[in-house]
Length: 402
Image 1: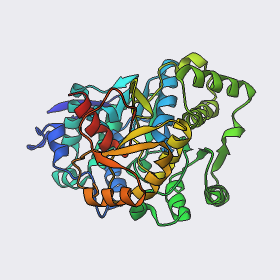
Image 2: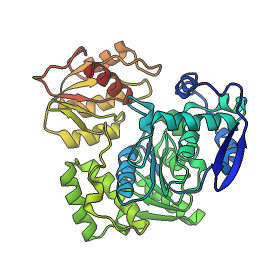
Image 3: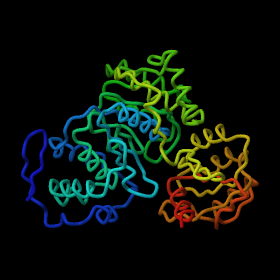
């Protein structure tokens, strides 16, 4: 038995006989991706677990791109301002712990295992088996985040039906919405936007959007559900813009990262918190146009919106593109967008059930008249851009770091 303290109450927990399985072993038995998802499961199990979560002020992040960097800008600033802050993001690049950031650092293994044991003891074996990898990880993170002042909670691939949507939020931040994960979210931008935006509960701040349909839907939501929808300019004043420029210069931010920073600062203004430039001194999230050496840039982006942002940020420079893609990505359009940056492509092997066949990637490169070869090692005399997915960056770093 164990005693678990929750909201000043003592809760007696009886351990299941199979609860001694370590976290990584438990997660390894779950597939990362599902053809079909039971959207009733997370709300149903949340009702069982709700009393184990200590209420915190939750800021939810939804959108297609920029959730990770926006969330880290916000969480880092709040942490530097002296608050107890948690940030949940996904997926990870090399270590699972990257997903769960608490008070300025990734959570350690001991805390992960302790809360894993608690979660294993609360839920029935059937529920534990049924929960997806991401659903279980979300509950685990929220247990770890108990007693935080603020939780910055990043949605996975959706919004309305995402595992993170079951928690009560004080604010939703909406990053740019574009085409991605169409099999789950819909085949047109209106369906995709609706699925994401329907997760808004009370208040939302909308970043600069590409499609007019996104703003149209937010207006419908504001009228139909009595929620407050704001834009960046509702909060950012001249003094804020000066600070944003200074922070961007200090951190050497490219334009799209500056936009993400602006959304994070608008959240601070909504919360009526005073911030300083120095609060953002350590707020870059690794893997987002990160320069890991003089000749290597890595980015975990994986869709057309990310490709356009990179093209805008890195032009007119030329790179060897280390690349691969999942089957469900529009890799032909992505490569076409990046073509002005590409000297040639080096295809890196990724061990993933969703990866596209080598032959189809090669055929696409031939169609686009882009030279290619298989990736083997880095040459110090060349400039490299590593892009395509978290899996591409992970595979590259494992080879690069030896």
